Image 1 (cartoon, rainbow, N blue to C red):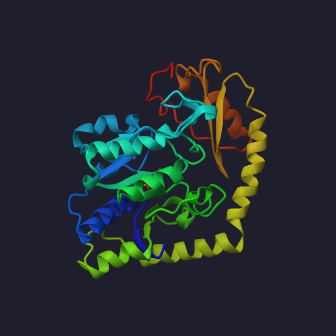
Image 2: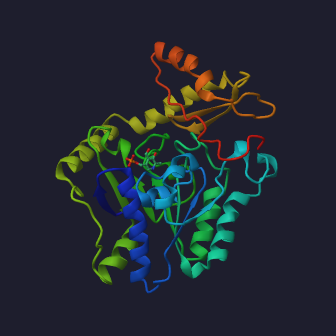
Length: 319
Ligand SMILES: Cc1ncc(COP(=O)(O)O)c(C=O)c1O
């Protein structure tokens, strides 16, 4: 990643990234490339654009009349595989779904595929199966579709690598960042691109007509700069990996608990999926009724947990 466009938060970073993709194709002589493909059970932000690319229906439903119609493919969600596969017989149907979608829309119309490398709030730490992003990269390259990673939540060390995509054997064309980029001390996000994307736009039209009042805010950029220095000086990325392994070992002891369906994640980004019954994977009837006890207990022990009730419930309960 060679060039960075600073904005005011994660949602703006997503919006700018999608616009950069569009501008790249325009300047590359492919004006029909405009469609964005993303995944169901994803979260990319709350403006009309970012919500349209978001796949968490609980977040979208109230605002559907304002959302443009974009395309979503099934997520990489091994615990409740949309293709009813298990890790043993997985043949990456969830990645191949991207090729199907591109073929249906027509490759000449597709601009970019947007995904979180490790899922955030919508699937709480879901990690894709082995080979998933390699296959996605292959498909994107085949059809000249840009690959954009939303690392607003996973970026700057959260998963035990500086960027979560480093866990996989791929590099994106566009990277959206936010949250930990400033350590939470200043509201800022960023969209980063490699030289070839910047070069194409700079040398062709020379114009990127998108931006916001506080874009490139010097105070925010200074906070980012200091935050990155701090992360480096204190080896926080390695620490996220080490503590993440410790956390994972501790969480492992909960695996046999009757209410714990799945435990997943990387580094210090971990999620637990609670279920009513481990064998059927039926969801808790009303998560809010059952979980506050756990939350309060955790809080007393100094651990603040975030509940995502029903967010994973985009599919029938028996799935
Ligand atoms: C993966 C992901 N993308 C985008 C966003 C939106 O970022 P923001 O809330 O800073 O606008 C979030 C926020 O939670 C997120 O988790």
